[in-house]
Amino acid sequence: MAFEKFTLSDIRTAVKDKLDDSGFPDTTIDRAANDFQFELFNDNRIRFMEQNETLSVAANSSQKDLPEDFMNLINLIVLDNVSTYRNITKTGFIEYDEFMSRYANFSVATTAKIRDWTFFGEGLRFQSRTDAIYNITLDYLRSPVLMVAATDECELPINNRELMTIGTLERVMRVNEDYPEADAELNRLQGLRTAFIKNYGRGGFKVGPQVVKTNRGRRSGGYRVDRDY
Image (cartoon, rainbow, N blue to C red; front, top):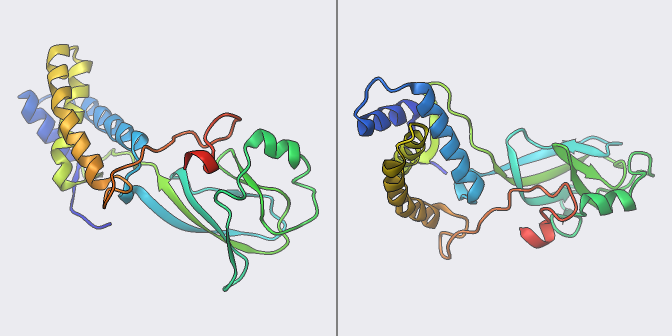
């Protein structure tokens, strides 16, 4: 999704203007800005944070690392060949404990097509070693990029610059223990946040956003693709 963005430098300037303090430390503003951005994208599933990648799985492999910016799974499709594919997002997913009970020998089992899988560490674990080379089409929700340099871009479009400014400002005021002022900014923030989610949340084209589940489901009772996606 293409739109104009703004930078960390813009956030610093806007927050200092609202504080009426041009000498306020950049490090405090930067930390607050990144924390607010993480909170915003951890709590909500936003369309422009969706990413696609093709994972190449070598023959005789029982695991595959996920992209470094992976946060939550959207869709997982195995390409057996150029004309045959299987969507295993829900039908193949098994909770880790059940998976290990069923496939404790996954690393030495007879090679087969990728069929059942679970999350393990920062990757996918298959029910057995693969019998051939496979490509997997992965749609996923990525994590925000940390803003460090003044020229680093915020993930938000420029029409939501005020949302980022107020969100950062509210956190900075709490660091300064200016609680009444922070509460006032928090009240202003709610409407801006609601409008952002309404406009950019998954399903926002017609029906409104869905809240993302942040646990990847590595433990029993956690996130389940068949239930929570």
